[in-house]
Image (cartoon, rainbow, N blue to C red; front, side):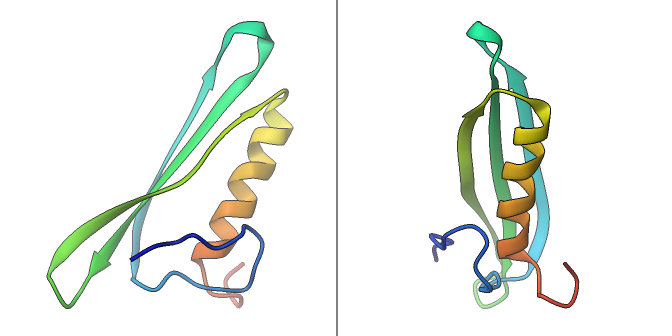
Length: 81
């Protein structure tokens, strides 16, 4: 199972989304690191699947929020976004 879909496309997660782990960390040089991981439920195997969504460096909090928006949009159905 892979979520290797370009951010912003209309694809939805192939497994039900359980939760997102989002980390914003200040790094040297005044930038921020944004890391996101989704935990999905594989109902056929009855197990949780963790998938890295992104790991990016940005200059501002606004850019960090944009990265989060782009990656969350891939995971939720279009009528919810």
